[in-house]
Amino acid sequence: MGVSVSSRKKVIVRKFSRDWQSGYVDPQGFAHHGKLELLDMTGKVLAMALEEVKMVCFVREFLTGDATDPERLLRRSFSSRPRTAGLWLRMRLRDGEELEGLASNDVSLLEPEGVQFAPPDMRSNTQRIFVPRTALQSLEIVAVIHPSTRRKLDTAEQERLFAS
Image 1 (spheres, rainbow, N blue to C red):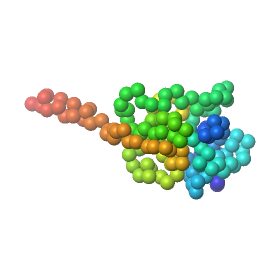
Image 2 (image 1 turned 180 degrees about the vertical axis):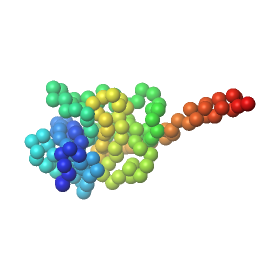
Image 3 (image 1 turned 60 degrees about the vertical axis):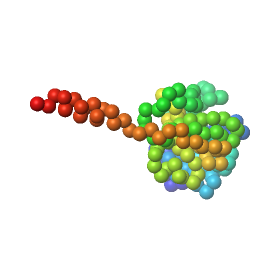
Image 4 (image 1 turned 45 degrees about the horizontal axis):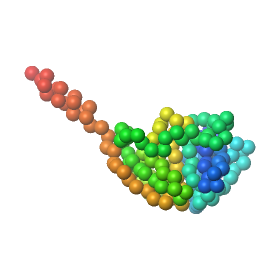
């Protein structure tokens, strides 16, 4: 994995076995050929089978004081319609857990190894989540959220009203 440590991202890997592993991944190529490459906290490179992985949470900080929920994913669904542009996804994982997120509306959704998205609460410790395709029972696109054009329309309307 010839990537420097400074270019790696902090992650918490949650497994279906209910345990988790913290470490670093290359954000561009951490999952391939059914494996997840993780540089653990001791500097050892681990190749984990994606079928064992429930989700990979890209985190701001490693919260070592919380042994049960280090990713601090407080909300797993949106309380209202997201405001940011993208695809509002709803997923059911193999263990029955439901999770929502906002994915980019581009070809990244077609990645063969899994789906990457922003969680409902962007203020939490988790900034992005990757769910391997092998962890999914179902995936639903709830809505396509388009970029807001209201401000542009309001500005154009004001210019028309005050034109001499």
